[in-house]
Amino acid sequence: MSKTDTRFAGFKIGRRTFFNRLWAVLGLAALAEFGWLGISFLASRRDRNRPEREVGVVDAGEISMFLPGTVTAVPQGQFYLARLPDGGFLALSRTCTHLGCSVPWDEEKGAFVCPCHGSTFSLTGEVLTGPAPRPLDTYPVRIENGMVKVDCAKARRRDRFLAEQATRI
Amino acid sequence: MKASRQSITDFILHLHPRTVPYPTIRFRLSWGLGGMAVVLTGLLFLTGALLLLAYRPTLEEAYGSVRALGRDIPLGYWVRNIHHASANLLAVVVVLHLLRTALTGAFGPGRRLNWTIGLGLLVLVLAANFTGYLLPWDQLAYWAVTVSMAALGYIPLCGDWLRGVIQGGPEIGQATLSNFYVLHVAVIPGSLLVLLLWHFWLVRRAGGLISASEGGEPIRRIPVVPNLIAREAAVGLSLVAFVLFLAMFWNAPLLEQANPGMSPNPTKAPWYFQGLQELLLHLHPVFAAFVWPFLGGAALLLLPLIPGSALPGGVWFGSERGRGLAAWAAGGGALLAVAAVLADNALRQPGVGMAAGALIARGIVPTSAVILLAAGGYWLLVKAANRTRAEAVMAGLVAGFAILTVLTVVGVFFRGAEMHLVWPWHGTGGSL
Ligand code: FES
Image (tube, rainbow over all chains, first blue to last red):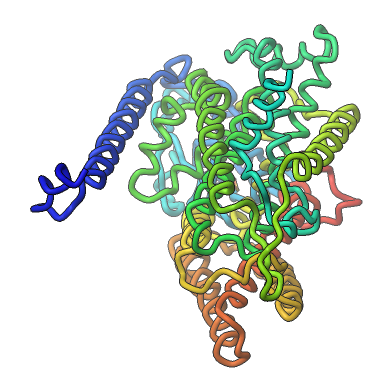
């Protein structure tokens, strides 16, 4: 015992301590390797849940179907088409910007009301009451031959409502 | 025969010390909470194994296979109810067990590591509950994943990456369900088992439960077999009987199949996260979903490292005086929480969103206020009222727990449609 100990005397650590530290280092290395393995395995699956169908441009309908000051749900694009009182069109995402619940339009209150934490949004998608941190996202709207078309590929984030976000005839 | 009986005794003694201090077998020291947690975990493993036989983790079949439990499999729903009841009771029991440990001074030197492992177990139990919540793929499940995944996204720097990894893509779908399934039936139970054995072994190494010294006399010790074992069996078996009975009437919920287009109103988190959901109503999401839980977790983790933070062992609240202080702290914390909820409710008028300035108004200001309040309370107790540091820490813990309880109760019973405050007897029911 004491013989072997003297070999490590220069390091000022005993044989037992030396091995204990060695095991600890090896153990941690193994743990790190497993962690890395797990994460890279998971990360490789990152784009498994692609949207079922490629949503591109959705035909919402003819202009005349939408009266100023109304909101129409367009299920095939998962958005709301809002027609502002001045006749402009705004396509609003139905996903709450707080934690992702889907917000229904409440006709009586004239507002979108989120069932999860009670955020409310105006016709233009602006936050009326929190906790939502920013207005509802929008999709680009085009008007072609009297038809309203919405490009659902990518939602646009915004900090506030600006008049130029709406598409006018 | 003798040999085999001896081997059973020896096995028990691997988990328990041979003798324990006499005062620790008093029921009112521990309330048997640790033992109850073990029994519930056992029930969960057993019923979980049965449920695995019936459940199919695919988007198409998950919902149907859970519903079929009630129709096609004899007593299938009872098994699911036992699993559900045990899981919910376990969440209550482990939190009470944590409080018991802290309030009888059992996180001091010699038990520090075990406190940390206990916190790890608490996280695992909550994670097990939550991942299980999602498996039936009904409306409750779907919206709970949606909200929790969005909350992950608020973690600074790595939030979006983490969300993508756990969700398995930009949308919630099959990969999400698979991830949660594997977590629920393999990763979490496996880790739980390892930590659990370590937890028991450390209790054993510390010489059993914490106990008060009996004046100057040496503590009397009594043999574990049969004294402790008999008591454990009594608590365990009564609990099993109670849960089985409860599961006959308390049905595990199953709403309609998941519908990504429509959130139920109100959409509520499972009750053990209602406190958190209540915070989400009042604070900026970065603070409610990340900063506050992080600070709370860090405080619990660091507690035993503060010198002199543990009460004298084995006596509830440290002393008679400590009990009075705890009562004041609990009352104060509860009042504070009620006042804060009502005040914020009154202030939240139309036009007050959570836009740019909200990070300060609904994040930094309330957080600083809470930290100042805690520091001020500590200073008053230790410097002005001459209490020990351990007593001040205990008061803080009790107050924090009272606040969390009030928030949970408000969330579960007093929030109705669109999360407005309602009286429970007028409300539209919650989620449990
Ligand atoms: S998800 Fe809409 S308010 Fe929280």
